[in-house]
Image 1 (spheres, rainbow, N blue to C red):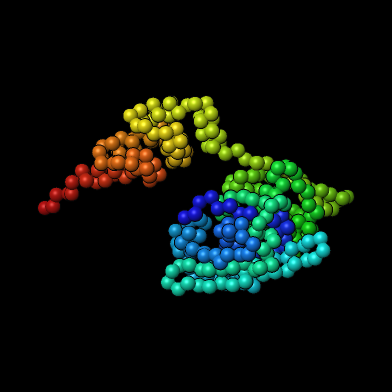
Image 2 (cartoon, helix red, strand yellow; image 1 turned 180 degrees about the vertical axis):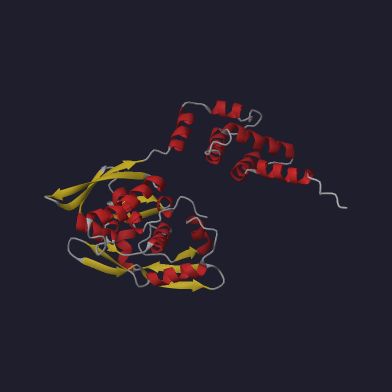
Length: 324
């Protein structure tokens, strides 16, 4: 599975008008993340069904379903307003299904080249993982529009223009309905799943709501901040000693990698991070056959080998019931 896929889009494309359902948006963004952005024309993209389903957090290889979604994308259009013209283009120009491989090849429409390739300025970038767990189709659009202004911290929209941008201009004519069905669900999802959150307030003329003003907040990655603090404060020795790694010659970088994996695996608080490293390290030493200790221990922490080994041992020690 490809990790840390980056989505990079021209701000014109971020603000473009289009209507895609939730899965169509995710497939488009996944494809955007796989582009070779240094080229001056689009490369043919290979969409791996297994990889994509892993990225969206499902264990099923939904080839037929995703094939249907991609096929429907051929008919979907995007409208981009520029200073001197309005561009209306299809997202996808061609699709090819590679039989018996679980792979689909697709190509973006050539008209979208200026908005996705060789971008030097006025573009928005973010990690794909921020939107993969969003369940509301409007939440993705709102995320992109606010991410674009993350450093500015504020963004204000005319209400009707904002509705057109996110593709719901024909729905939720009453503001209270729009707030309850669109704004509040998006607010909750962004706060839970992405790297930004927001507050908003109505802009009114008389008794009529004419706009929305957003306050955008970047979220601190507490785990990353902790790891950075440990590194900066020179607490590597403490990690080594408390985790029982004194007899190994792991580099500082390797110790930090092991500790980061262990932090993720113990974030529920069921077991101490140091203890988690220690028991998996002891399990490795007891094997007595490991040559690449760092590589093995990192994998052991990721998959909790010690727990698996203990379970096997327990099952082995249980005697079958006596038969009459």
